[in-house]
Length: 229
Image (cartoon, rainbow, N blue to C red; front, side, top):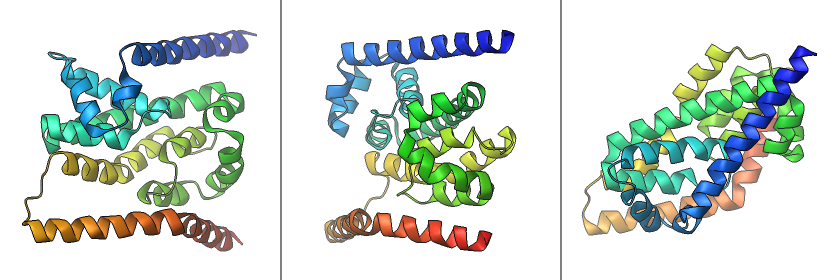
């Protein structure tokens, strides 16, 4: 009986905090600003002198609340604070947010996970996570076409130890965030022809990811399933 009461209290606190955060973001115009890096820059700039804290809080919320585009906020942070300050803030926020959703999933169980991650994602990844655990989670966090935040939630329903989960997150999740902060911070100074070439390459890679990302994901999933047999 006491366990049910604790779980109900945890549910209530989680819903209130999530609802309050979304309401606050909506009231301050965050979702309008989040449509572009320029809008995010202006939004974060308005939070001065607490801009760094606001940025950390936004990145933390982006892990828990799916509507927040963390790559856009990371690029805006790179422009405002510089590559490394923005990256360290983002990395810390993402690691903390991943730990929170993992702990909430472990504490609240399947019902919470399905509401937050969705039944489709649960059915697609949960069984493989339970069987492959560390191997699949590491591979999935390294590749951009897997839903990182959703996988961190689902991992809470597996037997992966909390310390090992955090280690995997710290090792595998920062690289895409570093790239976004570097883009926003103009870390790489190149001549115009090189920038045009890199831009073209980025467009090609983005198009390939959009077209073949699902196939690549399926290939990795098939490979992991075959090694289980």
